[in-house]
Image (tube, rainbow, N blue to C red; front, side, top):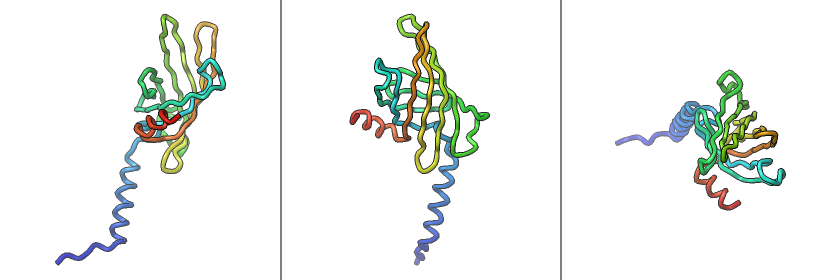
Length: 150
């Protein structure tokens, strides 16, 4: 006859298991998807456009993959606390016109999900646009659904 496992042992095991897997994850935003609002890149500078940004170790790409931004931590490559700064940059060629995009951002990973925000500029020829985006971590499927609902 086997003895039932005491409830407190099950709870302790679950806590240890889930905490160890969470600590093994790379710090945000690497490996995460964010539902963001982008402002400043439309004809109306105050128009808000939603998008999904999916981050890997070096790039953040839009949901449709049409644009990817290179990103890197600005704190020596490591996240030392719940906030982490990063820089982003890319160049996009559109019908022979090269558009340079640069910016600075921050990830705040307090709580279960992290939030993200960034400001930057897009320049081509003599034109310069300032832009920003901010959002919240979500799953890819949920982000797609939120885009459809917007």
